[in-house]
Image 1 (tube, one colour):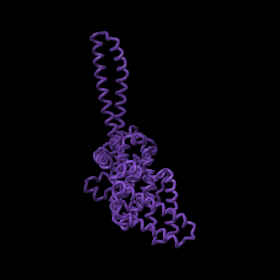
Image 2 (spheres, helix red, strand yellow):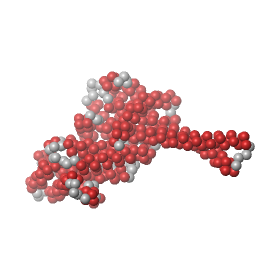
Image 3 (tube, helix red, strand yellow):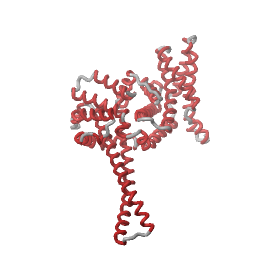
Image 4 (cartoon, one colour):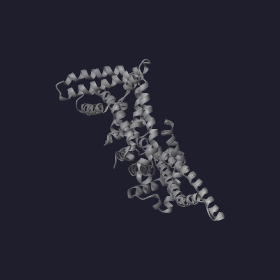
Length: 439
């Protein structure tokens, strides 16, 4: 199982341990929903096709969101920065308490590196606000970490985290967390850009990329709104750390980290971990379905035009008995190409229906995870508890055994389709909220 499925299981276990007030039907349906979204994330290719198809249509939106993050972080000064620099300097002073420790020299270098990054943040903003600065100077000042700096930043990252766990006294912990967060933020921005410029290797990779991007957006807004260092809590700095961890090639999200992330997201942003991550798949699949629809419409227009021409030439041949050489050649080509176009059109339509079907189904399961039992009942959607369990197990079976939708029994196909149709518009609305409004 991948990191996302593990995170779902961690959070589900924690929720089940304290959910005595909910009915067994609700708890069972919610557990099934958690398993389904985990399987759909890992086995999405079975339902949707390879990640490259989805990435092709969402990449422009993801790139735009990243550009917005970079531009926003350039323009606003950080009111808390001066006091943060003082705190970090005090952190250097605290090293004298254990100056004979082997880690002291490394911590000295790591904190000085964080101070350098913080000073760069401050200088970049001052340069942008300076109307007399040359454009070239401004562009140079706004660069991300270089490849050499990224290597150094990762080295300091490992050392800072070791010191947090093993060395630094409790009263200095927040200073060190702040230094780590500044470094983590720069690492995450750099590696996020690298990941976007390449492409995700699978849907779980895509989920990590988008989770990182969303956490960085949240963190950037917090960094720009904080007036003092005291406004940056350990939870705020924790989100930056998780963003930096998730974008790694081999991420690890421990049980404690997953449960804490779930709590922090719920408290600060009213969004639980599993929906926070999984809704990105729904948005990308809905965008893919929309793209397939656009592709079908364009292909259908060409097909209709060629079919009309074919019919005209066939009729002309019947009337005239003989066509010109040019018309005969054209007729021969169309007699082969028009049936091929029709076959391709039918295939596109089938792909679009399949994607829309699974988008709607996924939206239904996500709402099971997002909503309380009372909310589900007030929405008059108790069938989420009843049909959702069976449909969920059906989709897991499809994913486990690579069963295409067309191979299911007609009754099961109809049940999934009806279930999906209920949530299709809400899935599109979610897509608009996540992708479209960002452009």
